[in-house]
Image (tube, rainbow, N blue to C red; front, side, top):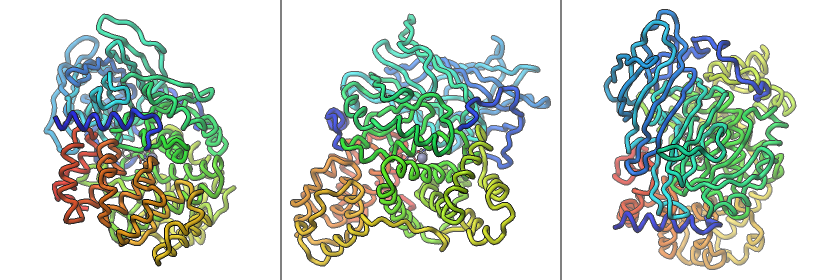
Length: 638
Ligand code: BES
Ligand code: ZN
């Protein structure tokens, strides 16, 4: 009963439209040009694959989406590149039911190894001589971590079910048996058969714009000719509508959300153009955005050709579109040049956060870009403070041994990474750095690289033997030492400095109504005001703020989130219904984790957190529950 009730809450929040809440080488390398050995010297500890022996080069899927049983069922046909001595190929799987493996129609032997909690099970397949294509018949588990199967009540329309995948970091193995390592790039194709009233989309070119009738449903065909890391293979199935934004951009979402989503994303085409000016031609063809139901656990996910995004960025005033700039930037940093192992996650996210900021500057001006940088820096400082300045997770080149890569993910990769690049830019000048950046993407297009390879590239193409410059930049300290080096550039924003004056005045007793410019504040100014408030405020102060600015009623997800954190730590009761509504109407981990943690830190909040979580948990994606379960049960280590 509870389960049903909370599902309805989730649906109604979405139902209202303004939820309040270059590759310069456009052509990927030809199949035959690619050597068996990857250029990656570092072993990927998060994969069983042995790509130096045999490497998957292409995945062809033929899958049926069975919404009653919550499984995908069908075959994966893999093209292999073998070294002459190799007689077996090892794939990654997790929770997959492998029924049969065949080559040219004949069964071949296979075995599944022990199940590791993090990595899953290796699937070892014996390869007959000269075979370089194998077909695996399998089905996924209803609990597959990459897949979330939504009830109709969890969608905006409320009438049709929905399915979406999330592959990063190591979840693709829960729906596709392949070498699930970001160092093993693969092209892919797919035929996805779904119930007749649903549409399938993927991170690939669509070959059947309206689907094809088959005896068992409607089939949708896809192909991606650029080799990508398998975490970027993505699917969504639902009652989806599309609206064009520009010549190569558009929005997919449920019909009830289409107007709001398209209105929010009017600048898509301009964003792609701005990115091309900075980085060279966009090499993926289309850039569309899929706005998902609210349980999507991330803000955005850079699936090629089709970025997945949370509906919580639909603010009605386009104030949260930096997230789209971020996912677009990944078309270069992440999708074109990829971290070869998850230790190099900062190569994806740090470069992307840097480019995101550059795009925001071109599109919306330097003031807005600076405000975002200051907010980001604030969260970096908080993260380093939380972990401690000598904690090894504050090192850019991460040590993830024995851990799920998802557990090592923090603001460090994003903000310390971006700050490092900004510090280099500052030292060498923008013109020089921009030229280096373009060259970096060119030199490594369609490759997966490590931090050490980045460092070698930086030395060869930017530092060029200038030892003094390297020392001044403290390059090795940035990459391999904890904390924030003392040469980090400090972003400043005049607008946010003014907000700080208002915070000080308010903290010292001024009335909320004396903050005269607040009526014209942007989302970022509100965020800064709220995160800068003193730890402790009196109930009278909170009431004054809330009555004057109607903060509890805000629909902008970032502003509401920042306000709710203030209200929890000061136990401001009038905001608690809004807190519960927020926690049960969206499943974005970035919002959920701090709010539940804040509640669990208080005496009175623990029971509240447990009660709300029990209601909301069935709606959340496993990515979010994996993070939240230990927090709610009090077993969290961080
Ligand atoms: N690629 C990430 C999402 C991700 C990271 C998925 C790690 C799985 C493991 C995506 O590009 C991202 O960074 N999303 C952010 C938004 C961004 C604006 C900081 C998010 O989801 O909050
Ligand atoms: Zn990212």
